[in-house]
Length: 156
Image (cartoon, rainbow, N blue to C red):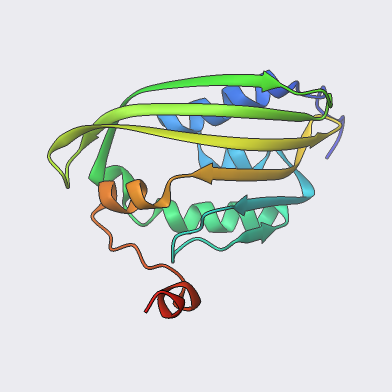
């Protein structure tokens, strides 16, 4: 791929995530931030999110599929703020992304906060642990939230 990019700082990575959420950058550009063997993990996955997606191209393919699902037809994102918090490990950062907008499904304004723990190696994401609220996401998108079967059975 020619010359390697300058190693990105955690702040630069988080700014790219903010731009993606805001629709200023594509999900494909987000996939480019990952190491070839990077992992995208949803710690509270909805029924349409895998717990882990392994590999940059698999991450790209997943986001291409999700983008086709019409999420942006259901919510209008009006404002996105991002905070990057450094940790005691220079290769680990915590991001807080807050987006506000209008849910066409609920016909109401919403605020959505997602926290992620981002592990970097040479300025590329090796692991992105996304701790967003799947219940609120499902509600905003007008999608029924389905807990995993085992959870549903154990509470019956």
